[in-house]
Structure formats: structure tokens, C-alpha cells
Length: 177
Image 1: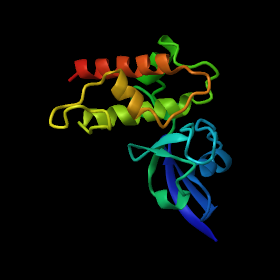
Image 2: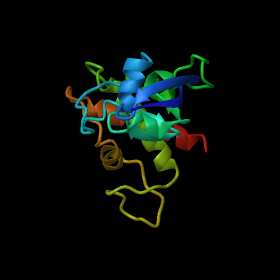
Image 3: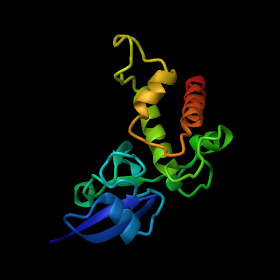
Image 4: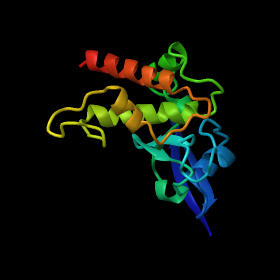
């Protein structure tokens, strides 16, 4: 059965009619032509399809598009330093390049979206499994970043660069508060 829905993707509103079983990933890639989120495992295990929905990171392959009617969806290519359409690189884009945080690049869009979401979660003081003192603000150390990014796999093993890029942007954010 087809359902009508509206998605706001990278600042543009799209009206779609999709089968109720269509994943958000398939709606983005096949219906809207947005190939930034990648189809890796299609089982929610690799994180290459990670996007931000209403500011929260989600696995687009496990999310039914009809459940996100009216939502704002941001993919890695929609991230920028300014308002939508401004063309400025997001600080994580620049950090991934500077810290050599990718090799083949297939997982990079999901890694970047996940990093944006996890840095926002961290900034709100949400603890993770490795947060030592739940009464204190978590510290953005290597173990904290690795745990929070553990849902995103990289076949090339660029994890040291990924963690360095996330740590750098996290430190820059801390300096602006």
C-alpha cells in the first residue's frame, strides 16, 4: 500500500508516494537521487547509511520512510557551516580531510553524520557505556569517541584518523562555549 509523505531533505521539501515498506535509505537514494547515504549491509550493522533526522542520528536502512513524514533529513552532503545552501564545509568535513580519516570513502558520509550526532549528544552531557563518572560531564577522550562511534564500521581501518577528526572538532566546539 502506498502512502503520501513529505520529507525535507537538505533544505528542500519533497512530496513522495512510497510503499509502506520502503526504508528511508531507499526513499533517499532511489526516489530522491540522494546517494550520499550508502547502502552497506542493509541490516543496521555497518552505519554507512547514518543520517540525521530532526537532529538525531538514525540508521536509514532500518527506518521506514512513512514513520518520518514531516521530518527534516540531513545527509553528509547537506551539512554545512552555515544555513542550507550556503556552500560552506561543515567543520567535520574539513577535519576528515585534514586528519586523513578516510581511505576508500564509502563509509565516510555515515561516519560524518554519526560524528555530528554524537558530538551533539556529548554536548548535551549524555553519558555512554564508557563514561566513568555519571555525575560529572563526560570527557571526550579516545575511549569515549570509539564507543560513541562504534556503530559505524570502516573496512579500510581509518579509525585513528576518524577519532582524531572527531576529537579535533569536539575540542573546537568546547573552545567556542
